[in-house]
Amino acid sequence: MKRLSDQNVSTEYRGQHEAPCPESGCPIFDLSGEAQIYPDDVYGSDALRMYGDGNDRASRESLNVLHSVKDKPGAKVTIYRAFPKPEKIEETIQRLQRERTSYLRRNQAPQNPLRLTGSEWYNWAHDEEQRLKSLLESDDNPNPPPLSPSIKKGDWITLSRFYAEKHGIENLGNQFQILSATVRADQVFTDGNSLNEMGYWGKDLEFTLNGRLRKSKEPKI
Image (cartoon, rainbow, N blue to C red):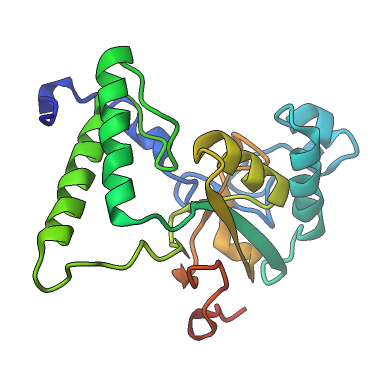
């Protein structure tokens, strides 16, 4: 299957896939400050009803953290991210082939952690399949290791473990692990669209294949 023409790639939604950052949002310790992402009532007793996204359990977990770090940029918070379970490279290629065939029939991209849709997802899947095939055929690395779990600068994260698990079930076919790390509140940003979806802007965090944060990569907090 060939790559779709670049003329068919829509760019109107690309910005929507970028996690909240210092330029587009505010740090979670100052929700109603200079950036004016939220009004002051986000710290009030009715905030869950006013700003929750319909998933009360997740929103409550996130809101409790947000309230606890108000005006505390150095406060420690636990961030979570659902990450695909390690998959053999041949299995990944086969899955991408099935998903691309399904896309051509239904014109609908599967749920995916990159949040790509339409032809942008299809072209990414095509390029990823070719990259993996090249790795398999390489004499230098005939059997490359699976993708290393990580939380990188600019990644989407959440303050609610329940929300991360829900995301993994709905977007990763229930084949996921939860990565978590303790970071500073001034490394996490929100744009006000959801209490449960934040951007992480600290050092890249690397994990073992079973989801443990590598000691050498432990962030200084």
